[in-house]
Image (cartoon, rainbow, N blue to C red):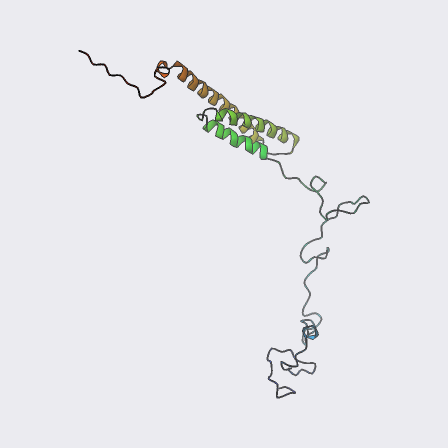
Length: 190
């Protein structure tokens, strides 16, 4: 059991150097306790350490360092645009053009809102198409759809706005009684 019988035995205490369990009072400090590899029964080949990647981090390869050209690198990862890295396509202009074109066509009856949104769709669509031609974006269809829908939105909204203006100016009763819309007169015949 224990060398010192007046001390209670701790069943979780590590065994001492002679294999006898130590009590609570005689437990060695944490740094002096046995580790998994130095435990009795754990031979040199039984418990292997975790694998180490060539870069030194566990499970992750080392990043490729860019050429320094005599200057210390600011980051271990190369910036976008350097060889070996593919930049994400900038598809925002074409997508914005298509969304604005759809809203311009649907919202043609909002008294000129379709004209404004249609013009914006045309502008964003042309910018998006230029980005596709330069290779910065890959949504050619969305940019073209934004240009077409923007043009249709401008045309339909302008026609609708022109019709509304024509209808207001051609109404002969709109100028009479403009002061009091509720004015009525009752004529009784004798």
